[in-house]
Length: 382
Image (cartoon, rainbow, N blue to C red; front, side, top):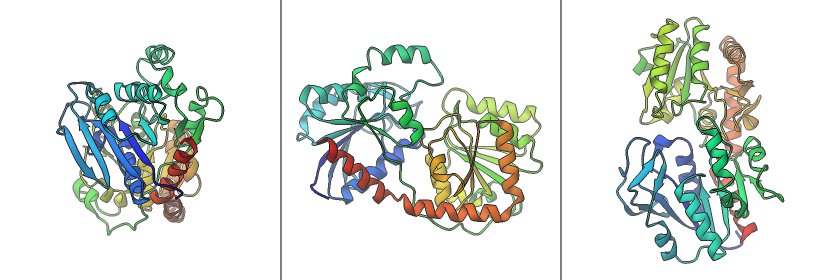
C-alpha cells in the first residue's frame, strides 16, 4: 500500500439491512478489508433495514469491523430509498476525505452525496449496485429521470465501478473516456459441506437421498423464480427450497399459486428469510440462480465457496467467473435450466468436479484480494 486513505462510503442501506439482498454483505466485507489494509473508512447510511419498515436500526454511530458507521435518521422512505435530512451536515462534519464511494443510484443519498462531492472538488466513484440500467418497473420514468435529475451523478464520477462484464457494458453507455473499472465481488472462504442431512433437509423432513435444489435471495420479479418452479414440475421427485424475504410486490403469493397449479406444492418449499443461511448450502445437490438480470449474484459465489455445483443463467455477472469451473451457464430459458439441472443430477462426477472448481474460484477471488484491487482504483482518482 502506497499510502493510507480516508474513504467515505455512502449507501442507501447498510448492515444489518440484509433484507435488501447481496449488496449489504458486500459493502460490509469491502469496508472490513479496507480497514485491514490500513485505510480509514467512514460509512454514512440510513436507518432502513427492510422494504416494509422504516427506522428499525436506531440512529447513531457504531464501530463495525474497523469502520465507523453513522446511521442517519430517515423520516421518509420508499423501499431502500430513504430521505436523510442530516446527510450533508454529517458529510461536512467529517475530515475532508480522499475519496467517496457512492453506492446505489436514483435515491436521495447517492444523488445528494454526488452533488456535495462535486461542489467541493472531492473525487467520488459510483457503484450502482445493478440499478444503473432501468429494469422491471417504471422503466420509462427511470429513463426520463436519468436524462434530467440524475444525469450529473454518473457524469461527475471519477470512475464507475462494475462488478462484472455484464454491468460494465451497461455503464459504458454513459461513462465515457474509459471511466469504467471492473472490480468483482469477493467470495467467502472455501469450506467443506457438513454431514447430511443437515439443517435444511432436517427442516424440510427430507433424507440425504432426496434430490434437492436451492435458491437463495429476495423473492422478487426478475429473479427467474417462476421459471425455476416450472422446471421442478418437469423433474420427477426433485425438491426445491426457496430461501429469502419477499420483495413486497406479491412474489410469494404468485409462486404459491403457481406451485399449486402445477400440483407440486409438496416439492416447492417457500421458507422465507432464514438465519444462518450459510449453513444451508451444503444440503443442496445443486444451487440455481435463474435470474433475468444480476450485475453479479453473490449467492452463487456463496454456493461456490460451499462446494455446491450451480446452474446460472448467462444474464448474471458472476457467470463469467463460474462458467465450466463451478457452474453450468445456460440461457435464460426454461428448457435450458431444466436440461442443466437434469444433467447435473444424472452425473455425480460432474457435480463433484464443479464443487471442487467452486473452491478454486473462491480461493482466487478472496475479499482481501478484491479490497486491494479497490484500493488501487481509489489511488487512481486521488
